[in-house]
Image (cartoon, rainbow, N blue to C red; front, side, top):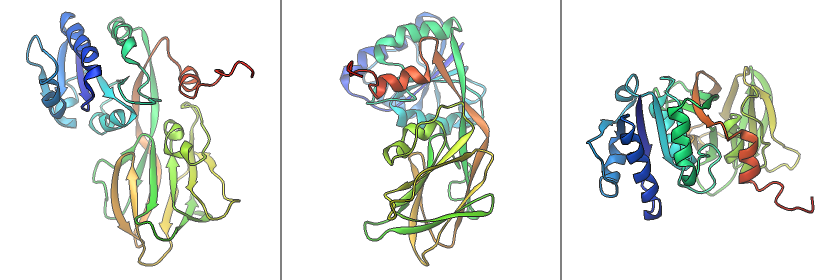
Length: 292
């Protein structure tokens, strides 16, 4: 078995958990790979029995790992997706961040999570991604997002007007600070903070959520993920930003954005004690108020 570690620097309070993770992996005789930038941080905090293998790209990861452990928050896991891509390597999210909807394994659950992986006692959940197509290939070959594609105004001045089309049929002109196109996984992210609905990961949908719309009758809409969403900033010479999860680029109104379901999925490891429903119930503290 080969396990890759990807993460971001964290506070010292989590060092002991990462040390336990590394020691446990090594004690099982599992081959360990560590992302090169993360290794630079770990070598100052964690002791390795043997020097781990190093990966720094999609090419050096694919075919060399059976699993990838993402150590951090949801943003860290989103970063790992750019390395895993279409390799089908399952990702386990270990949460050392804050809320953690997709990095749902807490530090005190690391031991049981490792046991589940070693004993194949887990579920694989395939998550839909969105791809962004533009004439000038704004994001090169990393033009996909697990959570959302977001279009926002570049400065703090006026709103922008975004014309939206579904399968070439005009939907609406959004006067707003921006627009979020979210996958089911992203329904608990940026879209949720803008008033979008939570939808379960298995649903084959895309959410279109306006950001602070000018007209109060404009509301989020859920469409099929078989639809192709086309967006265009209608204001002439208007500059805007488009982001894929946490990666962003500037573009002008001459560029049209085409968003659709990706032709590959990301596999997330869900321990047998976890589920999407239990995660949102815990993270959103549903049912805490016993009066309900």
